[in-house]
Image (tube, rainbow, N blue to C red; front, side):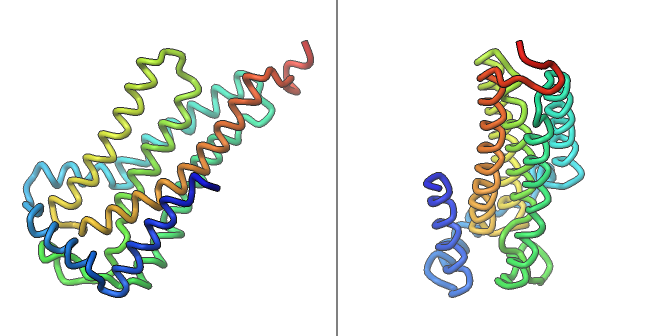
Length: 212
């Protein structure tokens, strides 16, 4: 898939630089030193990537998409919410072994430890808020409301990402790599949601309503 190529290649490049301690890592560390300034605001923004904050948003979108699809009589009403849930499940499945393999230490702002690459909080924010937006977009008719939804999602992801770097919880490359992972997972969600929307717009008869 052409859509998957850019984030996959960028993720591979970043990971190679982190593992090989390449020049991008030196740039990353200098950028981190310039950006880190732990304060209450950055900590609150970083919390947007916590499971306790992001997952309820996704859960509400999953429930809304499932209810709307079932009420509308779609044959495969469960496909979009299953895609969103599956993407979220894949976050720890992908992130945990990468953390162990890369074994990257944290910034000077956190206690000495390893396993900071990629950022699990960023991946959680990208997939939770992004999948929620993708699930809800087909249910909204107003272009203004749709744009607002996408804007809110982007702000939440950007806020979490900035907070994680500003607070010193993660290096910038940790966050960038998780954007790439999230983009790959959200592409899969988008493809499945689009397929479901096309079936509905084409007027495919459902088992519940029968042919018209």
